[in-house]
Image: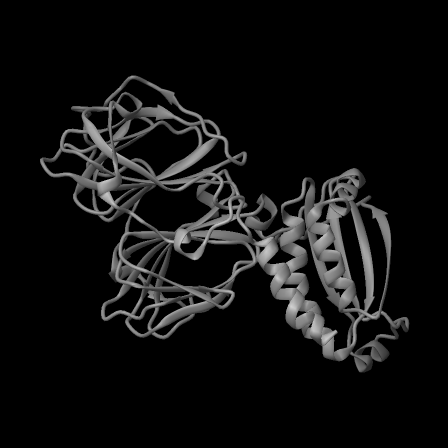
Length: 409
């Protein structure tokens, strides 16, 4: 069992965290190189010109992350007023000043600044200055790989300016950052959650601003229920994921995949400043609450796990079993339960049993649970669980009642 744990679990992690298109280490880190920009005019019926490229595309991650675009908006250029009905974006300016429009209301913001373009909100950006500005655009879709747009034919040139934004926005200021605590643990690390899950309708979970001082590091952090996309605003360092390290520098972008253990370290002389986008695998994982619907089902699996395999079994559930299920149609959630210690069981007069672990999984229908059993991911996850147990059994239930409690958990 110990040999199985040493060699098979890392292999299974590698299989489950592959993006749709396999990437080498050199391909994972993408440099934002203006020399490779395409020159575009009248973007969404906008004014002037801009340089443009795609750094990370719709097939790079397993979640519904759609793209990271980058570019330079030339003086008197911009992106015209338009809608999206299936995606959410976030415009970022890294330098200069731009006029942002959301739902017909326009305000000027100085860089570095972010403006989420929530689903169904019209939006635009215009550079009224005489200097180019560097621009980023992150997007998450309601459906994997799907995008849409509806142009309004409005370039926003000469729009009335309101002194205070009448829309969600934020500037990335160092003086409002706080110690990273457990979210981004590391010596001297500073952090702020700029935007949380309540902002977005899609599975977009958060936007974080992080500074890692020279010689320090963040992590390892397990990406259990989400993937991340990183943009390096300043500094340099390396990302280490599952024991593999890759260097990065200012204006690089790279993803962190589901079930990876990620460490971000600063091996330079200056601060490392990062913009980090988190995308949850599902709405249930985004909210942190398991919401069972009428007609849902639960499968209860009992295991006998020896003491020496307990830690590996619990790790297997977090890093293999859950990531394998979260990409399945109709998956609602799961729990890993460990039997009370023997003295506590005696105190509460619990029924004696040889099974010391239980996994409960819930799907919206039994049909979808059977699809999961027939999936390629199940062929990896189930052997990983049974290889670490001496004995197992299971039974299924129809959900006839569910009370998530006042907190929703």
